[in-house]
Length: 150
Image (tube, rainbow, N blue to C red; front, side, top):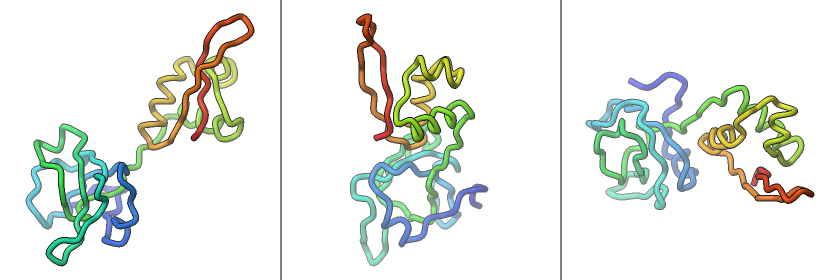
């Protein structure tokens, strides 16, 4: 049984994944893994490796639903790339980052009506976006954070 909206990895797709890519366990039913469907993990530093004539995916489990599974080699077809949908405010922040190149808390509040920019930035980072934070100082000496896409 596979989870809806998740396409199982094949060997070629698995080989193209970079270490750190977020994955979701979808248990294609070909083995006995005690992790629950939907358990989150990421690709380990080895990426993929070949052993005994088969390609294995280096997995590092990151969620409690893994139920004590050990990190290591697993079948690629039991995993899919994790896609996390963004909340509307996070999508607006991302749009501004792409169009303007940067965003500050004052801009987020005045233009987008986003009160908690750090939380929306955190949402974007969890979804896989690489965002950098730089501390700036205005003409009065007040410090503020400026975020940019890396």
